[in-house]
Length: 609
Image (cartoon, rainbow, N blue to C red; front, top):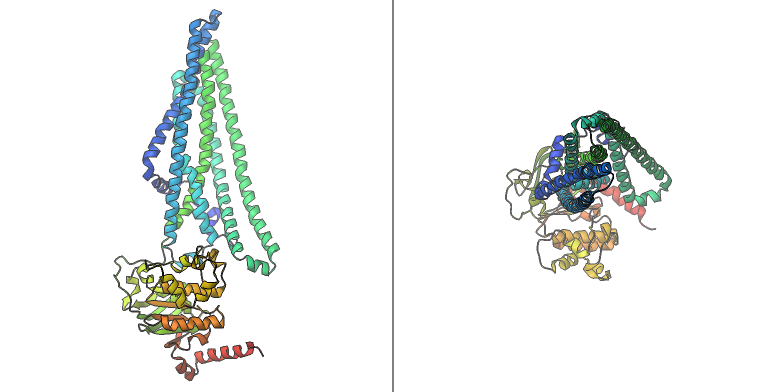
């Protein structure tokens, strides 16, 4: 069973194969714009591999051509000294050229990796903006952040070195095997008898580390989700003195990650010494068989020395490939999660041929609309009503009656299952979501402000209007007093989520932002619930002027704020039970009258004596 910050889909047993050709192909597409740099890098690696293979061969030439003959003659001839000097110079030159080539190759692919990561992050963020709120309702924000940050960062090493470096290691292996076969094919076959042991060790390593690495990534995602949730709710945590209890939960999650990571390290700690032992066995075979060949004059001394160097270099790319396997499997796990996110389709589909619309008159019509967040758990049931252009309509009802859901459906945040919603007689499913929301202003109870200045937040949905439009919007909602208290005026920073402002001030800014957007339809969802009485009166006075010519939908718990509404819709358990003016509904002695009586009695009890 998954923990509180995980789901069954994140469990290691629920994951698929470590290698997925389709995922690998999709990852390589991000390298396509930089194929010239990738090709250059591959060519450089081929050159580097040839230079690496040349070193041991130069050693063989030095020994067999100059050192061995001279030692056999009892003296070192002058020609041998010159030859050794030339070979030494060639060796140093090869190292210098290899250094330059490796520098250019590493720099080129590092730049490619950063560019590819940049493209991927932009693509993910762009896709996240297309997803509907229902996606975020069921997924911890911390886990989504892990996809955009850490999972993308994991791919950097794959883009920068992994893919191309593997090709370089293969070049090296083929070059070394080819050189050994060319020098002495019998000794080469003896040396390569250790390869089956290497294949078995690698297969066991891959099988073990595959599961352990997935477990590490799963535990890390849970830690991120836990941190994100508890840092956001830190005030509540401290208020209820739950620090110790939540610390124990985090300690457990952190310990799970530690155990999984240690297990992953254990497999590496066993595998690399095993490769060293297999390499030592290969060298021992070279000494045994090659030494016998020297005694029988079947193999030269220089060939044996070159083979020892080749054997050592042969196992270096093998070790590199094992490390690259770690990079590769990390990339597969991360790409699986990233592409799962990118493949997620918005619950609200856009029309294939959207209707072109001008500025709305503001007529809104719900016709037999039913909606459920979960199958067969209906939040709205057969709701029908019509709002005329410029009409102010209030929606009231108990918590969970479906008031906010009506606003969410009108703005196309969710897809309704039954019925039709029209704006100016056009089915909203025929209108592009952006075009629809471009003419709807929304002010929520929980106001969200972005980091930046007051001016930037008010002009968040700017339509290229004049510079004084922000000042006018704030003034029209009674924000002059707020502006005067700010040392920098509208250039004052609001802090993260508006931390430097009270709830009432944030709502004033939200009003100004919505009105600066100049909508045809204005939705107010409990928008005055957190302001004081004086501020509420000021806003109500401003709204009377500002709502002229605009259709407004006011969702309210405090019935005193909607007494002047042209019409009031009363929702009860997802059903529209009553509608009419305040006076008509009070005369009907129904649900609205009871709600009004209950609120009036409560206000009397709370009033100071």
